[in-house]
Image 1 (cartoon, rainbow, N blue to C red):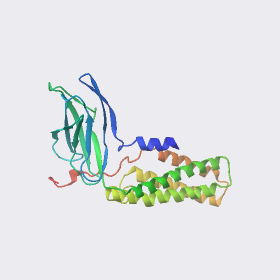
Image 2: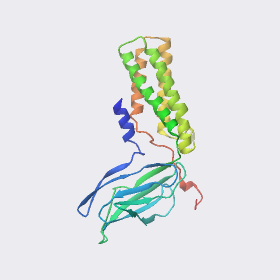
Image 3: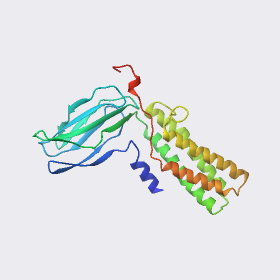
Image 4: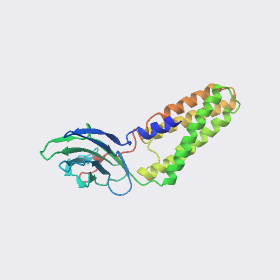
Length: 255
């Protein structure tokens, strides 16, 4: 269970890009955001204690006809900082950072440009409830799987609790959180291709089928095992893949 939590926390397109870069015989550790919520723009910062080194950032809106904008990062003590322009929820900014020495020697910090997605503010209570019900669902699903393997008498009860918690966390609170973050309740099939929405729907459908089969035949152990395996597969798909994004090329130029 802990592995699932860590995997979901550290994978996917919204997890920060981190690593290290060698420049002027020094190693610099970076962590750049790929998700930003709330007011203002995404803050890009990098600790560079050598005052002879400056930073330069180049950016534009992702999926747009914008020209690239290049600007100098501001130094605040040992840290180079730059706040990207604010975007509406689901808008994305693509950027890359270069370090420049006093002799005009430069190097890119990351091998590839970084994409940061903007989102609206989501109340903490909504996030807590969403996580509580979803991780309760996966815990109950695993328990139901073992109940099915050992042909226990409580399989239907665990299947029912799994379905209820998954429905509440994924199809009630999940869309509410999506509305706060990106202004859309549902962006999965048939309205979009959001993999998080789609995988949640698939898991719930499989568990509802399993629940129906187990109710008709309490010895339908295989359905509990299948549904539990599907649930595990779903939770090992990184969060936010193919998530909400704005295609600025479809906007009138200048917007």
